[in-house]
Image 1 (cartoon, rainbow, N blue to C red):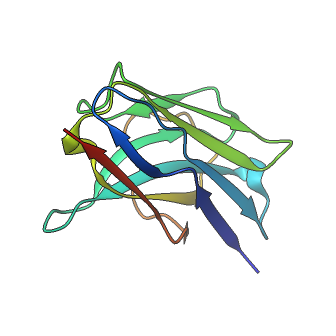
Image 2 (cartoon, rainbow, N blue to C red):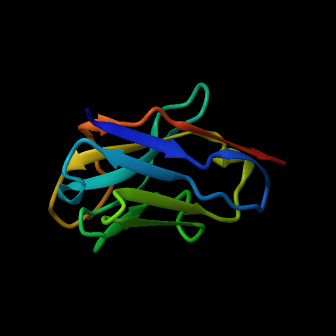
Image 3 (tube, rainbow, N blue to C red):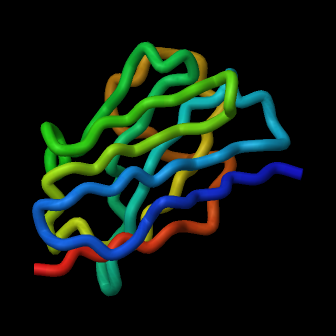
Length: 125
């Protein structure tokens, strides 16, 4: 059974940090690019970041560039999203998603094959 399980969301004050993680199982993790996608109430889903299957290439949306970093540990089948200098507008449910993709990441990915259940991030002002 394929599973993507996010954890590490929560409530933080503006300017603070969180580090959600995404633990994967049930598929060959090293063959998949992993992305983080967020959705705030009443807004469309936004691709925040993605990392290639090897970890050698990454992408960030302009809205988080310079504040967020992404990394993966293929030995642990886990991806991490380090979120610093958080703003109230970063508040959303954050989903991790996996797509079979063994190429360089040149931009945001779409059409993910698998999705997690999401983790809530709330940033208070």
